[in-house]
Each structure stands twice: as C-alpha cells, then as structure tokens.
Amino acid sequence: MGQGISYASWTAIKSQVLANFIVEWTEVQKPPAVVDQEYWTMYFDGSLMQKGAGIGLVFVSPLGVRMRYMVRIHFPSSNNVVEYEALINGLHIAIELGIQWLNIRGDSQLVIDQVMKESSCHNTKMAAYCREVRQLEDKFDGLELNHILRCLNEAADTLTKMASGREPMPTGIFAGDQYKPLVRYEEPGQARSVLPALGSGANQPLAPSNPEVMELDEDPAIEPDPLAD
Image (cartoon, rainbow, N blue to C red; front, side, top):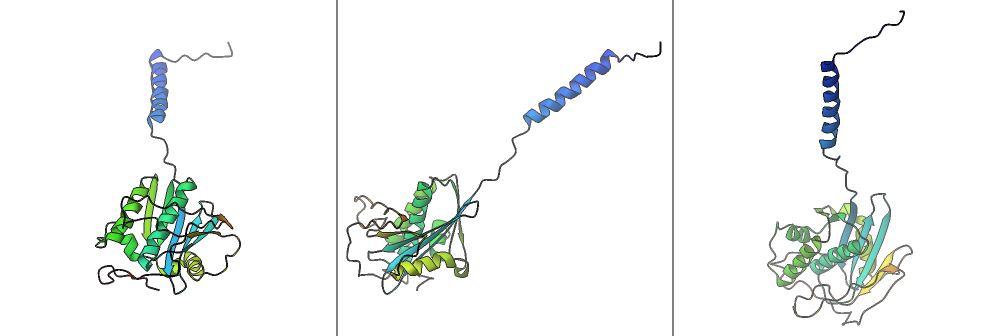
C-alpha cells in the first residue's frame, strides 16, 4: 500500500493527555491579573484674607477631565481651619461623586502631617478636624494624601483667592457659600452642619453667622501655620 499507518503507544498517548491537563490546570490556578485602579486626583487649598475666607478644590478624573469648586466661608476661621475645611469639603464631594480611589494633594504641611499621624494635634480644634478626616477615610477603597509645594497647587490656590477675595464667580466653576463649620468642636452634642449644595451657579446659603468677623489661631505658638497668607 502506498499509504503508511503510524501507531503511537498507549503510554505516549497517556503522557500527552497528562501534559495537556497540567497546562490547563495551571492556567486555571493562576491568580487573576492585577488591574491598576483608576485614581482620581484632588487638589485642595484654603485661605484667609482681609475680605474673608475661602477654599478651592480641583478634581482630575482618570481621563484628565477637570472639575473646579470654590466655597466662600462666612464664619470665624483661621488659616489652619480653612485648610481642613477644604480637605473635608473635598472628601464629601468625592463621596457624592462615587469616587472610590482618590489621590489627595495639598500644600498645607501641618494638616497633612496631622492626618498622617506624623504630627500631634495639641489643639482641641485641630484634633476634632483631624478625627473627622480619618472617619471619612473609611468611605474609600483607596486614599492617598501627599504634600506638594505651593507652586504645584496653583489651580486650587487661584480658586481659593477668588473665593476669599469675594471675586465674581467665573463660568464653569461649581460654587457655594458655607456659613457653619463642618466640625463643631465647641459643642460635641450639636449636629454638624450640612455641606452646602455645590453646582453650576448654585449658591444656596445657610443662615449667616456674622460673616465679617474672622479670628486667628487660638495659640499660634502651639499650632504654627506654615501657610499664613
């Protein structure tokens, strides 16, 4: 016959089947590939000026889309307080947006060191704000807090100066007015104020509480403000 027939031994067939099974089983047992989480980035800043206080926030999505917020503060405050108010406002907004992975960047060395437990809070006011930030951390799957130079925080700083200087609101910026602090350390039993609604052109003030009066830190020697304006 012109055609030949080749035979394989039973042992060879069993060996090939076993090899194929091992390859398939190994692939199934491999852990799934780690997918890089898509972090949002939030820049925050707060400022106290002669005309008033204000905060600025810039959110950058994983696709590079920017969202800008500014809030005019209308209650007695200090530079350190408005920095904390900026951070907490930003965390609330991130939660409302459904952000789970957030990289936070700010130029307040004091606030970041206290939250990261690299510096102790010797002031009751700062301790209350710090506790609030740590409680909000549990709302995220991933949260990073990094200190940056002020020159790298110009976008948030510009919004802050516009808010504290009571300048007209530009188009394309979410803006609001806040008349009560988000942390009421003086009266622990009192409910905290609700974050003012932020939206395009949305200015929904709460009841004002002497918007013209501002205060400095209670004890600058204990709580130095490295970013005094």
